[in-house]
Length: 117
Image (cartoon, rainbow, N blue to C red; front, side, top):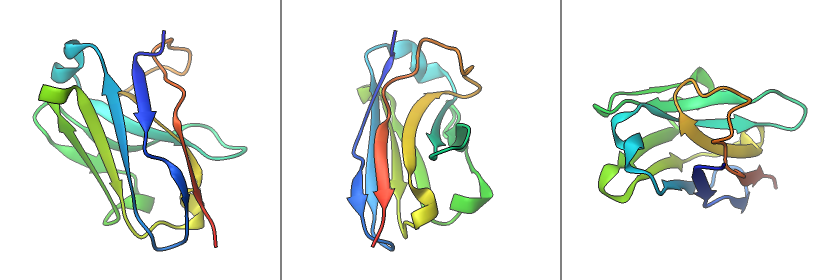
């Protein structure tokens, strides 16, 4: 249960930045496509950014140009650099494999991001 440990969230003002980290103890994820997801209050979890094992990245339109996903396989860690944060970015952020099912036991606790003035 809970294969991933997310950290780095917090309360920030609009326009500020945060860097989220997601660490797993298993090296198997080095060869898998990974992603960051978020769940905003009252909404379903959505995929925000993905990164393949070959470092190809993609983003949901709402974060393009502001968020950057990266990974360090030697550290079993995936990152999400979030710049120019907006109130609409407020959510709990999770990482998991690309296409992870909602009912999977691999989800971690997530890290809370609140963007508010």
